[in-house]
Image 1 (cartoon, rainbow, N blue to C red):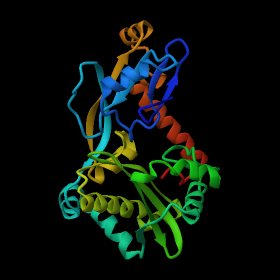
Image 2 (image 1 turned 180 degrees about the horizontal axis):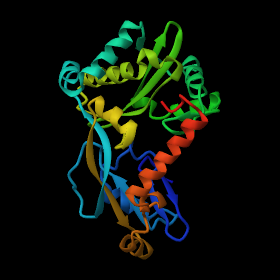
Image 3 (image 1 turned 120 degrees about the vertical axis):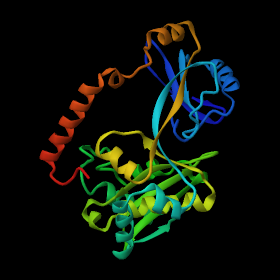
Length: 289
């Protein structure tokens, strides 16, 4: 569905739960008018959930909410980031990429850029201890994936000579920006391309006066540690749950909106994640980077 130019997806059979399909990049400006319009749609929505902007940690509405954790980097200047927000090891990695001759530049969303993305995605079937879901993608699939929010996005590539070995997409919101992806070739990890890409993202936000940079949900393990080393901190933001029907009211009381993975106790979840990472490490040594 499309409500106020925002795309809504609905899942569930008994309880129909709606949310924005791009909820980390699209936000409801006027929730009451939005929900009133949503209720008039032909397709039934029992319960609707939405987030505030990633940097906004204070609840502003009366509906039921639960806190959701995201990774945020407060941005002021590049010098402040380099000297106050990251440690010596990370600073050395950023400098190493420059010494290796990497060139980072903003690139247009053209065929060359998309072919470069395909090449990066198809380098290895496993990343970060799990199956890499972009592996095997073709040109059309990569274009469909990256060609969103183009009116408020910038694309940056990391180049070793003429070869694009990494990239990111920076999407601007009202008071923040989000990194949709930071990824590089594992075969070039000795040049620290991801460190260079994150440094470039900080520079762009500082130059454009963007005070907050969001990079995915808060994570534990190596991914979380990697983001923390680059200055990202945990921001807990409200996720609202609004019942729109009697079924939605029952679902809210019974917490039927929770996904199966959210019902797993933390110790068991961490054990399962570790087991999955170990399995992929044995199957594809060196790929879980």
